[in-house]
Amino acid sequence: MIALRSDDKTLQDELKAGGSIPKHIAIIMDGNGRWAKQRALPRVAGHREGVSSVRDIVEASGQLGVKCLTLYAFSTENWKRPQQEVSTLMRLLVKALRDETDKLHKNNVRLTAIGDLDSLPAGVQRELNEAFERTKGNSGLNLNLALSYSGRWEITEAVKKIVADSAGGKMSAEDINESLFSSYLVTASLPDPDLLIRTGGEFRISNFLLFQIAYTEIFISKVYWPDFRRRHLYEAISDFQKRERRFGLVSEQVKHLQTL
Ligand code: IPE
Ligand code: IPE
Ligand code: MG
Image 1 (cartoon, protein in one colour):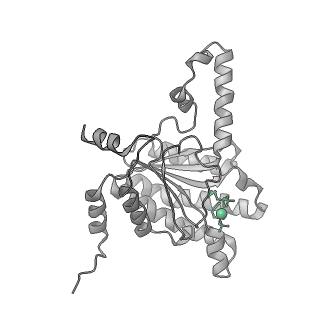
Image 2: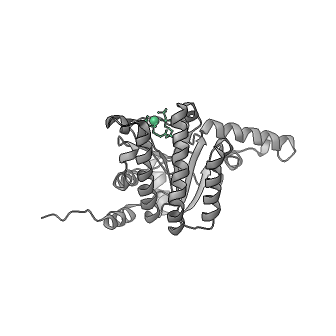
Image 3: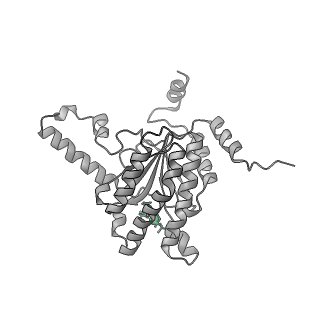
């Protein structure tokens, strides 16, 4: 009889032995509304259940040694949703921060966020700032929440700052290159994502990390976010490990670089 490979530690060890674990994973957590609709529940029930998925994926990512996990939780465009849904999402965020920060801290997780954080309600900003302050010294997983975030907003803001710095004499046009531009993005301190997962089955980017995903591997899962658990994450990482990232080169060059 074949033994069941249900043991989580075994699965994690197999992944660690199977290839490199992505340093930075970014996730578009989509499908909460459809998950709820399928069950004839209000959309907010999907958002609520989605918090359990976040908990599981954060824990498993930390155990696997992922350095950074960026979760797309609320986009610039999501402000245009019905006001009641927006306020429920904000309330859920405050509750999740209150409930989870202790555990995150105990697990050595450092919480950060990217996006137009000033546009968030004062209560959300307060909880976030407390959680940032509390976890800033942690050296394990960096859990990075994208809140009121969009790639176009971020790029536009970067251009504004570059123009201001240039007008102030801090730089000239010749100084601008990809690396300088990256340093003006809200992800300045982070490596580009190695793996981007989108749950809920849509094949689109929805304004997420437009500049940073130039060479990111993409994995689309049909699973709605509230059903997405660590075994789905393992599947995505295992798929990632089977790919050859060529960064525009030919296969032989990539293999040669790997042996250096
Ligand atoms: C993702 O789920 C959560 C947010 C965008 C805040 P959705 O609410 O977009 O769920 P679907 O895509 O409508 O199913
Ligand atoms: C993307 O999901 C944003 C987040 C997951 C926060 P959306 O549901 O907003 O994206 P679209 O509307 O399907 O493109
Ligand atoms: Mg959606």
